[in-house]
Length: 162
Image 1 (cartoon, rainbow, N blue to C red):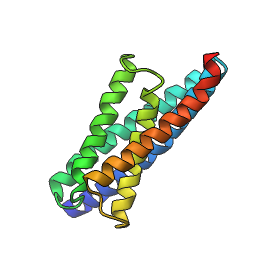
Image 2 (image 1 turned 180 degrees about the vertical axis):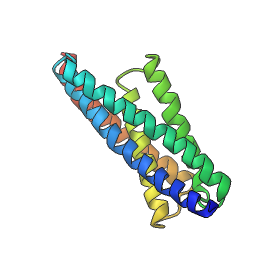
Image 3 (image 1 turned 60 degrees about the vertical axis):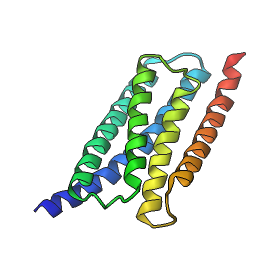
Image 4 (image 1 turned 30 degrees about the vertical axis):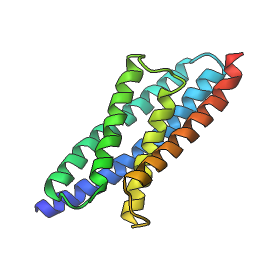
């Protein structure tokens, strides 16, 4: 019975990561569109509200399922566990900082998107045993994702800064 629950938790964990990556993509896209026309109309506000709810659901599901999986099968994620916890912590801290407006809107959304994408990448890499995820590989992947996310965000913010 517990093995079945753990299997369901694994499926929910992967689904939550996918929901988070997809919702994050929609959130940053909607954010950029709203900034481009310099107004957030009622429909954009409603859409962003739904997207943010989905992101919160994904974050809660990821945290709970990861904790459960590591508790039930501590070796399942192997050395990936430390990276999962690091990325989950960054998701929560950055989301809190963005909510409190303690982080620039030129950085916060890019960091959140990069964190979601890195989470999706490392889980896929681990799942398919593509290569060993060690500290240097993790840092390199995460930094590349941050640089790309910052570059994309800055590119789209550039016209609005005139």
